[in-house]
Length: 570
Ligand code: IPD
Ligand code: CA
Ligand code: CA
Image (tube, rainbow, N blue to C red; front, side, top):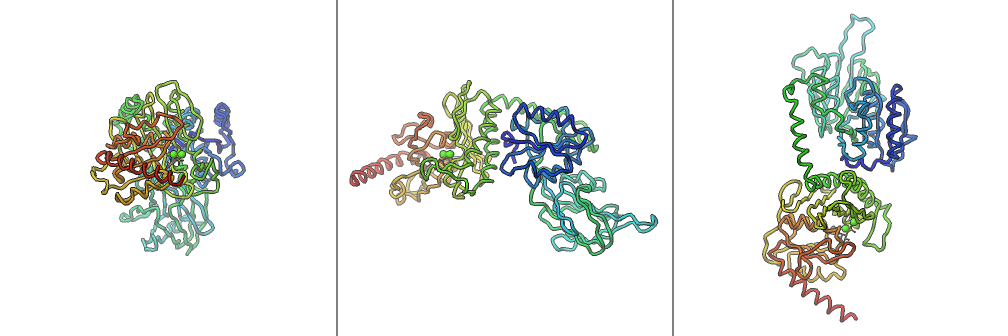
């Protein structure tokens, strides 16, 4: 999940430990100023009473790591992102100081925080069925007589394969996030937890030099069979049970991840482990991060470059919301006719993108297909189609996209088109070439129409299709004008024809296609101006360049044919 989406938070649920009243009152004052409702829930109570599935929430924990872990238990199954405030105690997970509470919240609702997906584990057996973000510990029970035997014997299987028998005081099975907890103290490795889906099995006090920690993929099913009595604790006791001889516990990666909000007020991972755990390999390199930040700051001064980054972030955040709704056709309503379907998705994507842009560039104008125009005070205006290919989207077809262009004095200078279902990001800045997922793209060099693959937009009489199909290698109608132009740019099509498109359909795609080498004109062969008439539809002809003249004369023939058909019909 991308932190940009947090710009559209509607409500906050705060999970509050008993000694965090001051932090709660700071949070409530801040939220009142921002007109965001806060629901305070005491640790130990359930959030169900205040949670409504359709709303966009931020979960805030006020307390130490215990409160944070309780937050993970309650927020993660509902995929609510969690911001942890460390109210007073030494904490590793809840790492924002109360002094930074309001700054961290400001950054979060501006869309400036990031959200990490953290692998969780799922534990099942002997009355336990739960998830945890840190670890499962299976430990010997202290004997009644202190001089009695103090070890457990645990048999471990990975996906049914016998791993071995662990003898010692027990085992810790931890997630990457939990690798800095109890398993570290037992000699386990530190995992960098970002984008890390794995589990590790770490023996506790094994008394054997040759028994080492074992790392497995999070999809692996670990079975632990107890050969005697032992205690099992998940996340330090958030769930627990007592095992007897022969009891079996199953541990695997959980299906849902915990969504962890990271702001600039949190320490980054390696700073945390350096400062809190004495990681000693970067002591002389404290300036490293600052140097990186200095480079970022100077790049941020370039409006267009920064705009491209913001457009990529915003489109990914909106893309995530669209992926969630994709195929859910229940909420479809009709604008004016069947080909102009607007869904809840259009508005949701529009809200995310425009809020992020407003926050980052308050002086810029914004024109989006789905909201009223905001006139800016600078030379920059954004032109957005938050969902191009709504018809496809509503029918569960994956060919839809998000199109975001930046205009400088009404000239498109930057374009971003994101295809959520294939996770493809097409971008271009005028004069700097076009890219797909960061790699340069260019149009084809075919010179003859009969070798070309064509893409067509809305073709009301089907004449373009029937006329051009035999003359070329084929005509495809994909249903997203923005994607059509990107496919031309990337060379999977040689030419594109749009009978009539709005500026927001094509402004970003035109920058991308032109930067990849395409020629884009109107039907008369004049330079295509996507902005010329704001609210009107225009015909567009795009090609790799070499076949452009041929295509235009072909279209002439085709238009004559259409006119003839029309006359005979009259
Ligand atoms: C439509 C699509 C379609 C094109 C139409 C557009 P929408 O946009 O781009 O491919 O042929 O002209 O209106 O309504 O899905 O945003
Ligand atoms: Ca469109
Ligand atoms: Ca649209």
